[in-house]
Length: 290
Ligand code: PMP
Image 1: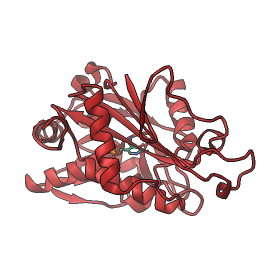
Image 2: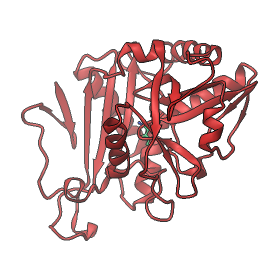
Image 3: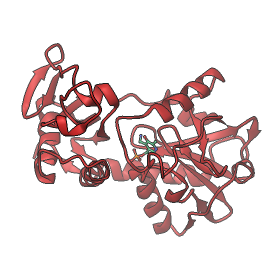
């Protein structure tokens, strides 16, 4: 595997960064998780846009312009002969001192790893996930805005541990007001009648690229999409529930906090959206080899 660090490619063994990097010392940096399907990088522009927005929010000046980062992602895929895979793009604040001061970090580092994909086990896509609400609430906007895809993922990791301790793969995180925000690495949707509902971004969710793609697909196929505040009660009484994310794609949820959702099986709206989503992933994106 060839890993990109600051313009050079290294073998897995030699791909190393400083122990003084504030990405390591403080989780000070931003990242993206991107997918390649069928020789194309899916929604690359959208991911790089979001990387720039996250960086702006933490006052991190990226060392390369938008187009150059896009090129580096595509080139890393090419060097790894990747057609289908998962790309991790990381920008750290760079090496500094042991103190917090980010001004001591002169050179942010850009790291790109292009690897094989790690999906949920196939069974969950067929049968659906059982998930639970966990005690750890989503970060407050006023503390660390969940819209920032930063290297500081402890909020999500704690929730993930709580889910795993209860035998679940994913966790529903509420915000401080008790409304549904999102899951630890996925956005959440419900279907109620002819409506597709997902929490508003202001409830404390990442501006999910899969979320937006699914909203667009649903609107095109005539579903009414809305983004109201949702409570656990709304989830329990939904006809269908599913999660979206670059890694997970679109995955059904059939049980939440012990309540069976709808028929307890992946529903027709989910099935149609999964089909449409895959049609899109297989036919669009930034070409790696042309
Ligand atoms: N929420 C969180 C907290 C995430 O980390 C992610 C990405 N894994 C998502 C939602 C889904 O976002 P996207 O569809 O852009 O991958």
